Image (cartoon, rainbow, N blue to C red; front, side):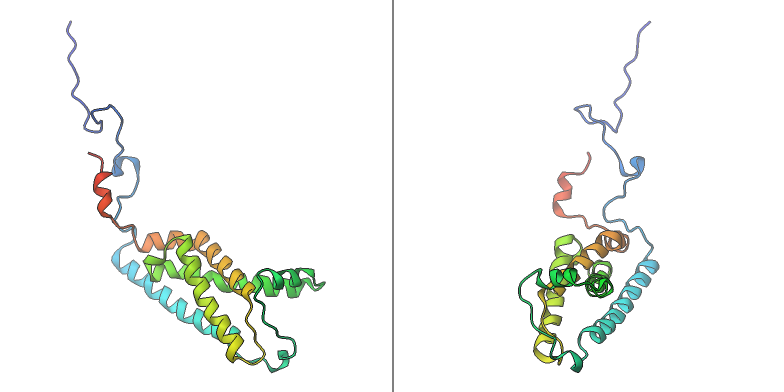
Length: 192
């Protein structure tokens, strides 16, 4: 009895290594959106409205004068000084309000930036954009707003909040709304 050679599977390369296809393995093909076009547009509109609302809240919380605080305000250019001062004080509620509030204040950047501007996806990009915007807010506070001062620790806490928001929600949401692009170097990694 003679055995007949089976034809080579199209999913195997010459080397015998199994090549996974996007449909077979459940992986998404780069460039193919996870959401339909109307849902993507709605998500971007909601993100834009959220960013506008966040901007209004940010302005109210950080750019309103506080005449009662004039004697208490001082600038902080040394990272960690304000954080240590809040952690050393006996009033735990004030510590949570100040430190936690600054972290929560940065979270919308990490969630909304990747949806509105896909070029800002990535931990480093989110951190840089958030730090830049918050640095501007702190500079305006320190120079023009009565009873407010520049504090580098606020920038660090806001940036930490943005990174948490990005890791928890923004990463997934950004990829769902804006699929990964196919770059020229993907031609060389294409399964053949």
